[in-house]
Image (cartoon, rainbow, N blue to C red; front, side, top):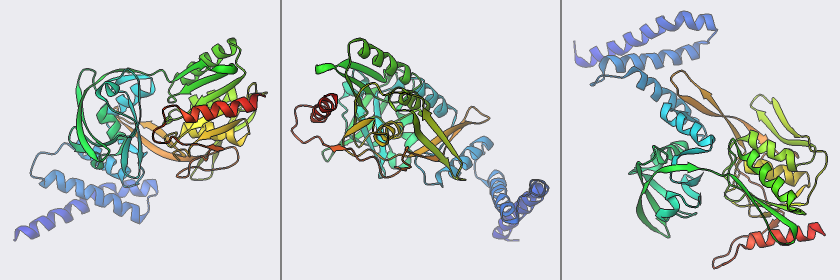
Amino acid sequence: MSKKKIIIGIVVTAIISACLTIGGLCFALGINVRQAGDLARFFGVKHFIEARYVNEVDDSQLMDGAISGMVQSLGDPHSIYMKADMYQQLKEHTEGEFGGIGVTMGFKDNKVTIISVLPDTPGEKAGLAAGDEIMAVDGTPVSELQSEEVAMHIRGEVGTHVTLTISRDGSESDYDIERATIKIETAKGKMLADGMGYIRIASFSENTDKEFKAAYDELEAQGMKGLIIDLRENPGGLVTSCVNIANMVVPKGPIVSVVERDGSKEVHESKLEEEKYPIVVLIDGNSASASEILAGALQDTGAATIVGTKSYGKGSVQVVMPMFHNDALKLTIAKYYTPNGRCIDGIGIEPDVAIDFQQGDTTDVQLEKAEEVLREKMQ
């Protein structure tokens, strides 16, 4: 018998074996014929690889690859399968402290761009800047990685190094950077002239709402008459933290509606009975996700004037589902809508007062415009 016929026989045997193995299960679970066929194909291929692949096969690694492949086939940059180490890094990041280099990134049009560089971090000391495009991480082109994988590859154990290939002004350079513990103070306030309070929100993590309230209370104690909320270069984060902040500034009623595929809706509402201060919000092209929830709620309710440039346009909601081997699945499960029913996914929020940085600007013209608008609202 020819070698080709032997291989075909093995494949057929594997598929038949798979069908017999899962046939009873499919019947018990009410799985239809097409689904049963798909399961047979999957287990048939798995069995053939285990039996015939030239090297020894790690069964767990095969399953990891299969799950990852399913998620990648969705074509959604925000959905990803996370192995144990990647899931652990995600948890550390949302808790507000992790090993990294101190940059936030945006993922759009198949590009990875640095949105902001935190002060006094390895990224700033190495000379990275907002607008830099990341081409590769440790020699691996970012085109070969999913968006979350890029971020997780950059993070790592404190004291270890990562090499980023950066494109800037048409030329590429490698930056070797030593990771450090990154402690994120996500909300910080200060008093500007004429009783104008200013709070910058860098991202929405577990403690952001507490930090915002502390800054807000301190500005009130100093006699605040109006408030500027700066959401520029804020990539988003935890919706719960965003909703808690919205309860301090958005008037009573809907903040955001989360709508799933079947049409089921969860509405987060503000309980704020009365607005205390006129508000201006700063956004730009890197204000995304939870930033857009807060800005959209303030805009739709008329509680704030939005100044800057159109926001990023990420209007989808992800959930992280822990699995059985300390791994997890991060999956897009819904889209969110502003109080007026706007879905801004892929669209973004248009500012009420549009103003962009111009090349050669030596001052923050957007902040200056926000102050000008707030002065008028305070009169």
